Amino acid sequence: MSVEIINPFPSLSVDNLEIRAVQKGDVAKVVRYFQKNRTYLTPWEPSRPEGFFTFEGWERRVIQLTELQRHGLSYYFLIFESGSDEVQGVITYSNIMQYPFHACTVGYSLAEDAQGRGIMRRALKAANQWLFDNLNLHRIMASYMPRNQRSAAVLHSVGFEKEGEAKDYLLINGKWEDHILTSLINTKWVSSINE
Image (cartoon, rainbow, N blue to C red; front, side):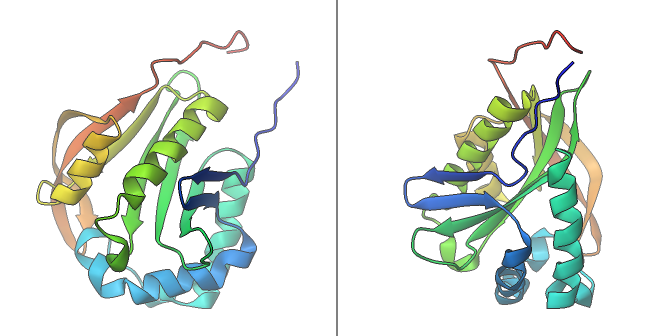
């Protein structure tokens, strides 16, 4: 039986965007992204310890993320515009599980000054397709707070469908928040003989 090795550091291009998996050389860029957008992202994300906004904290985190990517258990994508090394957003795929679930969870954030240009819509669509094509996942799940209409619009535009609502689902900014549950199904999923 042969095991196919999937590239742990994929790089995708769509229009003027580069979407690539985080690597050690990206630490300073990721720190700048979260420091610059700290206030803007606070209402939409879990409370972060101070170490989350430091080079040392992200140095450790990127080591963990690259190991998870090597094993196909998680992917942490950075979004750049062509010709720039400034992170415009991030897309995270976590809890990647194969047989019998063949699914994962996606989360994302976009810089305040990158809003309204279709960046997340284009990047998310490309990254989702990469997961379907390379990991043969059947389902990608996402959730959003009912008041986050921008996130709802992004998910709807790339094909996610509402599946339900969850009360007190995630601890966001120190408060339990209800979420709308959605998923994107891979209509071209194929069963593997080796399952």
